[in-house]
Length: 370
Image (cartoon, rainbow, N blue to C red; front, side):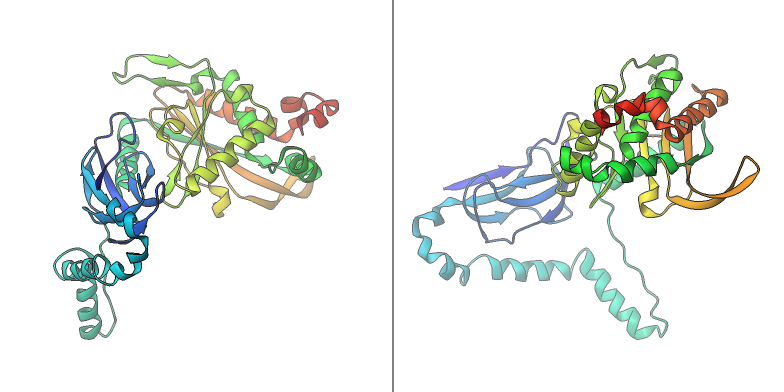
């Protein structure tokens, strides 16, 4: 029996996908529910699984763009009748033929040409100057378009401040073992910044707003869905922590950990990345000292965190070495005034520098929070 597997719909409004990787070879025997390929849409990378056990034959190759519902591969389940013949059949059909065909194709199109050209250039040019052309993934193409659109359609400005991280580092180091033992997840910096942003958004509600498509109305959100930028194999994704104002430190950290695992395994869903009223990105994990983050459309602002570095700072007339983080707030000046942006960023600084007062309430609440 021949089973056809067609391109699934990754989500509403998506009509086509790109084959980003094939995880098995043509002619391989696959088991039901085995992951056989990954597809890129303009919003996420998704896995395709075998719907039955049998011998698989692809009808598309890596890099192809297919319509949703188009035939992707077939599985011949008739091979299940004589399991003892699988190894013998491998020597006769499938794998070898397809590999030969793929080599032939390489001589005609795509990477094959560039590799051959590279070899020629290496022989002819003593400086070994050459280049390779790689097609952008569907996700990267969409990200590129949106970033350019933000630059062209918003009046984006960035304001900066520096934050004394001593108290956050003290709490993190003091409670990291008990927090991990009690809740099964590490206590990181992001939970403190999510909490600080929610407090600042409540103080400066225009930051938690956006302009509608027509550019004539301001939409003011009375809930707090916070996007967190997470790096993955395919690039930076921004899943949403829903109703973040109702969550504890433990719940925020568990949500972030869950997102990170899903992105690493390419199992994050589009629904988990749709929406959001404000975004936090942390270039500090890559060593960035300072940056001007780009707004995540259609939102009006984004907070950029950076690396923590010890710096000499003057406090009360004395020079002290203090762990400092630079913060950046990029915002759409069409809807947010400079005064609000500066006040918002100062509110975050205030919360981070005095977390017990502004985020926890009192020292007696520490054990409850951590």
